[in-house]
Image 1 (cartoon, one colour):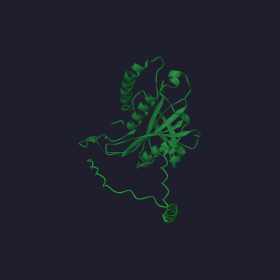
Image 2 (image 1 turned 180 degrees about the vertical axis):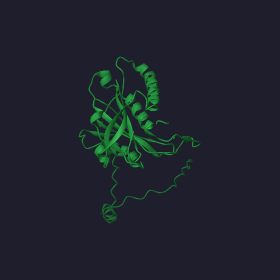
Image 3 (image 1 turned 30 degrees about the vertical axis):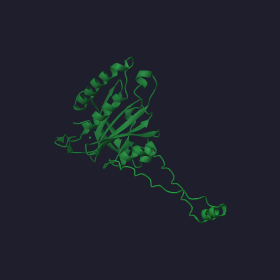
Image 4 (image 1 turned 90 degrees about the vertical axis):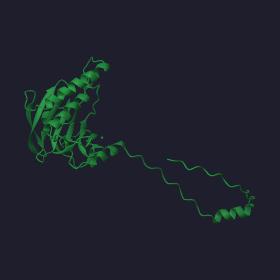
Length: 247
């Protein structure tokens, strides 16, 4: 399982030339009237909003994206996509609620309410980054791993020094990998949530940092989700019809 790739032309010397005599005022005015008007300079390109730039990555995907269904009426925002060595989009995340930060509720006491949905393409055959081998197919475990590591990225235990967080994150990321590889273990329970209105089983677990869940849609797309401050029990998922709602 992979969690989830002048030469410069010399200037020629100018030829000597004799400066023309200044034209009479009347002749200069006539010449100016007959001369074609200069074209207006083109307008500078309009900066592309960051949300639109982010959406471009999502639009390259060959699979549908999922988010929380219409029952959720709060803010929605795009996060980022993950690509294979050849640039093919393999997975990505969409956010709902408050945009989380690493120094969020756990470290500062500030209440954050968010849920992130991870969509993973069904991909039975993937090439390694160097193109010489084949990687394990994506699965529910792939979604669980991406969700678990995503939650950790926005977690910072209280009283932990900045210099120690990197080591802590490495250790916890390895633990999340092992948990994702053992979805039938005692650390996981089952939870049924609607996906496009159809009850769908998910693997679910909670920790002091929040909750993580993972499952698959009827069409084989793998879904993961993680959050904090929002209960997972009342969530529902659906295909995103318009990415503009996440701008």
